[in-house]
Picture 1 (cartoon, rainbow, N blue to C red):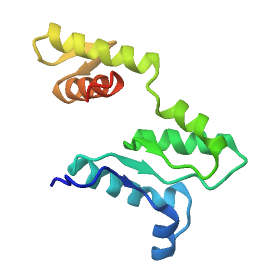
Picture 2 (cartoon, rainbow, N blue to C red):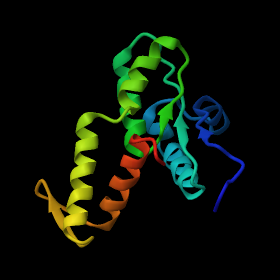
Picture 3 (tube, rainbow, N blue to C red):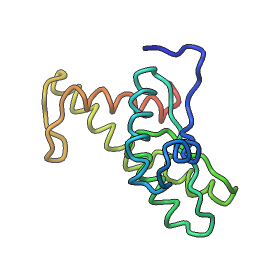
Length: 142
């Protein structure tokens, strides 16, 4: 599936929760988030997670943003400008993440693309592909 005219999608958690009569908590919306990530990935477009509605607890925002990143979201909407620094902090690749991806790509190159180990963990084609895509995005060449 492709979506050439669509630049990305944003998860409307409040709209979704209202339509299916569920709560706005992470567990209640986990399936919808996962389904959206799968559809967006199949269409080769980025997905942005819904805002965190709690304004005064940066810990909740940080946890939500980390979970969204873990699921595959490219970013997170926000309802107040003070959320921007936390969101940027979570979704900006860290020096450690970039170093790990570079180590995986180097191991892939050294192994001729066959299964190998990096820091005591098995790595193969899916990891090589993900690391190269991550680096292309982090370097701004994707």
